[in-house]
Amino acid sequence: MVLLEAYALISTGLEEGYITIDAPYIDLNGDQYGDCSKIFEYLRRMREKTGVEASKQRLEDFKAHFKTSLSSGFCYEFTQGDLTRIQELINTLRDELVASALFEEDHKQRLLKRIEKLQAELHKKVSDLDKFWGLVGDAGVVLGKFGKDAKPLVDRITEIAKIVWQTQARAEELPSGTDMPLLSEQDEKIA
Image (cartoon, rainbow, N blue to C red; front, top):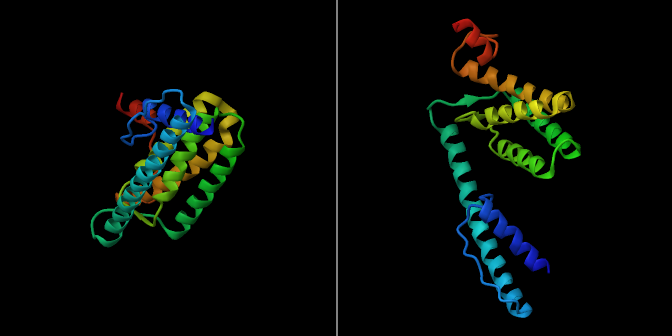
C-alpha cells in the first residue's frame, strides 16, 4: 500500500508539473507482487534521477557563487551585519510559517520552499536579487489574502526587503538614504 501511495504521489507531482524530471509511467495490472516490484524499481530509478538533478543544481549554484566571488564583474554585496540579520529573519520567518495556522499546507510548503532556496543562495556577494524580490511579491499576496493576521510574517519580509533595497541602492550608486520607491507613488508623480 505504501509503495502505491508513493507512486501516486510522484505521478501526481509529474502530472501537475511540481516534479520536472523525465519519468515514464508504469503499467500496473493488479498483481500485487508484480506491481510492488515494478513500483519499487521505479522509485529506485527516481531516487537516482533526483540525486543527479540535485547534484547538478548544487553545482550550478556553486558555479554562480564562485563566478560572482571571483570575477570583477557586477555583483551585489551584503555587509556581514546585513547578511547575519537576513539569516536571522529567514530563520524566524520559517519558524513562524511552520507554526502558523493561516495557510493551507500546500501554500505553506511553497513558501517554505521559496525561503529554503533563498537561504541556499544567500552569500555575501550575489549576482542578482531576484529571489529576494520574489519573496516580497509573496508577502503582498499573503497580506492581501490574510490582512492583519499575516502582519508578523509580512514584517519580517519587509525588513528583509529594506536590507536588500539598501544593498541594491549602494551597488547602483544611489545617494545614501534613498528610500525604496513604490510603483504606486511613482504613478502619482508621473500623472
